[in-house]
Amino acid sequence: MIGEQAKDHLGRVLVVDDDPAIRRVCARVLGAEGWVVTLAENGRIAMAALEAPENQFDCVLTDVNMPELDGFALVSEVRKRDEELPVLLMTGDPSLDGAVRAIDRGAVSYITKPFDQEALAAAVARAARRHSVARMRRRAESYGRALYGGSEDKQLMAKRFASALERSWMAYQPIVDVKTRTLFAYEALLRTEEESLRRTDIFIATAEKLDGIHQLGRIVRAAVARAIVELPPGVLVFVNVHGLELADEELFSATSPLAQHASRVVLEITERTGIDPVAGPARVAMLRKLGYRIAVDDLGAGYAALGALATLEPEIVKLDMSLIRDIDRHPTKRRVVGAIATMCRELGSRVVAEGVETPAERETCIEAGIELLQGYLLAKPARGFVPPVL
Ligand code: G
Ligand code: MN
Image (cartoon, rainbow, N blue to C red; front, side, top):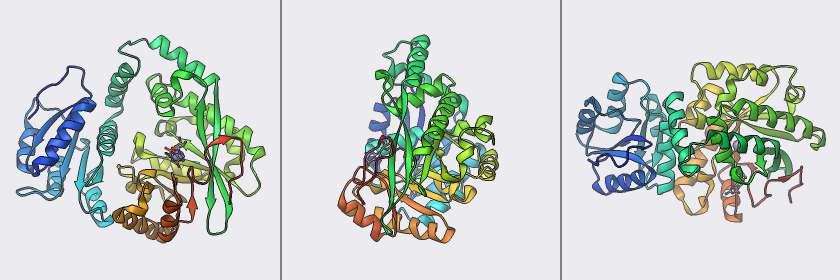
């Protein structure tokens, strides 16, 4: 058990694994990120820790195969007591069966072992983030404090955000159909000339903190609507939608600028920001009625986008670049991508591999049955609709 490391921590994570080496790695990596980590060596000890009133965990990270009470049983036990506490399963066998079973039991997500430290930290941060909007806000604030050197200067942040909006522009990156050697679509990607918010993830985190997600989304959609006249005929445009935008009426307005072009627009939805499992699918159905197509973004990024496959029935599925990176050198990644490609074909969804950087990654994706590719190898995001080399 590791005690409080700092008052101003990100939250509490319970790590459950019978392997002391894994416990040590998790404690070190998550501790360094700012989480307070509690360790348990099996499901029984974990249940005792969960029941101690002083422990208010934000996330449980657990092994699957353990003596006494295994990971699946632990998820079920947690769910009996707490409907919301995110449980992340760590497994050495990333079969789709296992993933589906995990999600069935109420795990929010799973990560595959061996994992790299970045993936672990990102998965825990995402899982905890889904916990509730209130908790997300609190965490965003501490994230903001870290970003802004401990100053809580909201005014400065608001000034930078306003400047970033004013100086924002859209980059476009092609998505190519390698089978027919044709240009399939462009993804619209937000960029800004405001120096302090050049990183898009920080720009968006700032918008979350300032309640500016709707404002940002409207600016993005209006910009795409203006650009669409330049879009080559027969080519689609993918636009990212933040989970919070599913509550913005403008997105659902038939008279909005983007809705005029809905049949050429694919809205990318990610579970990163936590789609309400009840309201979400209904909102998505409304978007389809307006003529938009739907893509599930970042599948395989370490959270339960698999759930979105079932509930949203997307026309397009985008595989997260973490699955694509070095896929030629990772037999398990290849198996997972191949299985997802097969499943998506059966469900009638087309699959895009994101972040293809090398010829070897491209060839392996094609062999795995993926026809739509996006990534630096084909073209980097650029101003305007620059044609890729086909
Ligand atoms: O979350 P989403 O998948 O929408 O984010 C896409 C991001 O990935 C963009 O910011 C884009 O610039 C970046 N990107 C696009 N292609 C590549 C690639 O081949 N490699 C890497 N590392 N990043 C990429
Ligand atoms: Mn995207």
